[in-house]
Amino acid sequence: MTPDHAHQKAGGGGEGTLPQAWGGPSYELRSSPEGDGGLLEISMGPQHPSTHGVFRMDVVLDGERVVKLKPVFGYLHRNHEKIGEGTTYLGSMPYTDRLDYFCSLTNNWAYALAVEKLAGLEAPERAQYIRVITAELTRLQNHACLGGFLLQDMGASGTPLMYAFREREKILDLFESLTGARMMCNYMRFGGCRCDLPPGWLEQARTVVAEFPKFLDEFESLLNGNEILMSRTQGVGVLPRDLAINASITGPVLRASGVNYDIRKAEPYGIYDRFQFRVPLGDHGDVYDRYMMRVLEMRESIKILEQAMAAIPGGPIMDPKAKIRGFRPKAGEAYGRIEGPKGELGFYLISDGSPNPCRYRVRPPSFINLTVLEDMCLGHHVADVVVILGSVDIVLGEVDR
Amino acid sequence: MLGTGILKGMVETGRNFLGSYVSEDRLVTVQYPEQRIPRQEAARSFPFLVFDGSDPVWGLRCVACQICEKECPPKCIYIIKDSLRKADHIGKMQFQPRVFDIDISVCMSCQICVEVCPFDAIKMDVEVDFSTGDRFGGLLMNKQRLAKPNSYFHKIHPSDASEVDGRLAADRLKAQAKAKADAEAKGKPAAGPAGKSFAVGKAGTGSA
Image (tube, rainbow over all chains, first blue to last red; front, top):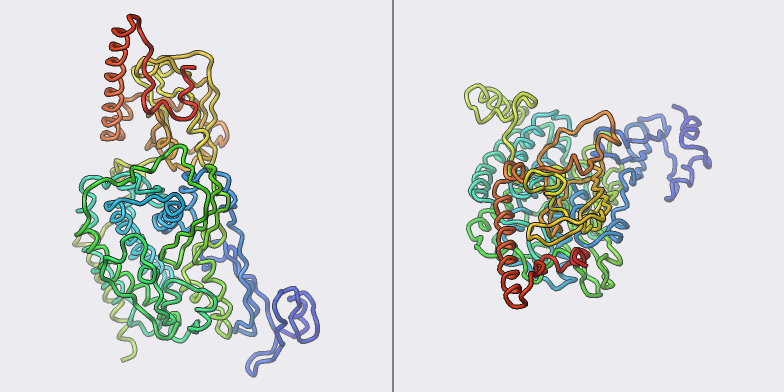
């Protein structure tokens, strides 16, 4: 391809630079020694199978190398925050399921936490334990799926993903027998949980959790020592520690860069201060570290689950002050945040004393983690972009809201 | 040695593949339309209206209080009150819905209508086979299609249904005792008392 052709593709612009329509600083057109010097602009997505939904990346390539990448979101925008301001507090709860549809229970928890702060409610002991158990189960299935998807992005077609889905299915069955729905659970309420654990649920959950390490061993021996996986992930998509902190990256992506920050430890919400678990930390901040971070976190989640299921007390599951109809928290504002499987998930609410929130804002982890996508991808191949995107763990329902 | 990692993974795949011939546990899928996994009791799909007895119109528990219509997050419920009254489970005269539509193409199965209903009139169904060629009329459930007997509720959610029945029976006993006491005190028959569940929202205006 000739340089002239490249300018045509990029839509004009000055000699040797990309057009300013990109919005960022113009990129100097340099010819690489092995390439022919032409830049090619590709729109990856929104229907690209590796973009995990309707996500688009405008990628500028020099040969196979990425020289510029611009994420384009909004294809799944559903007006979530404005709808939240138009419905009652309770009415927003089912919508939070649909943010990160893999982890509806942690979304519920974050929202319930914010409203509980606003209204001065406190979930009773048993409800707190149920919340921890369901949230950690959510983390297990989210990380298992992420591992499967990531390996699928690298070309391990099907097998790891299907193994992960097999395990996820068991956890979704638990969710269904508890909440009535597999994914859109809509389970937590302000001041507790909607219903108590059905008889036999805890035993069933214990079996699933007890068998989970077996799956992890299998999953790790399947690919962890694999030479192809190593060369595709190690040193790819490095996110420097300082950049990760400055860009307010959270969750496993941040910890893979070696920053010890887990809200479960840093600002324990619920009853997380009662459990013994460690926070795995990465060293290099590359895709491999981010992948391993999930595997190690699953092992820690199992520890939390075992402790929680051993210690769960009986008792009520709703704060007696909580009411379903006519719920009007007094005027004020609150921010509730949790360590979701993807990072810090926060809900910021302003109440003016009416049944609807005056302002309803979501801090979505995967949206903010995506902002450093370009920094991670620059200089890598197109095929690595797919893997790097997969390692960030995005769900477009949450990115676009 | 280069390649051992790959071989290790292949062994794992092989173990899963061959294991599926000997171990039933490894065969986790079912052939869906012919074979179905038994339903969980808590499962939910779309709302339906419960009626007592055998008359789907006069037995309907719904008193058209419109709380569910107001609380429904995607606003898929549409209710018009009828001017005719009917007696509810404690014998008190209440409104009834002339039109009660649920657009299940909009409904998101969140069961908030079930939670907010003070009369236990709306419950979640488990039926999921609603596919139709007519996306407007076919998915707009009217009162006739929504009304299902209490026995059906017992069939799909047995423990929930017995709990509700117990609660309604207790209400009825309380109302009877109250009516008797009132009648003795005033020497004339009194209407049913406004129980706790009737003091909320528009429902309380039913006797106005």
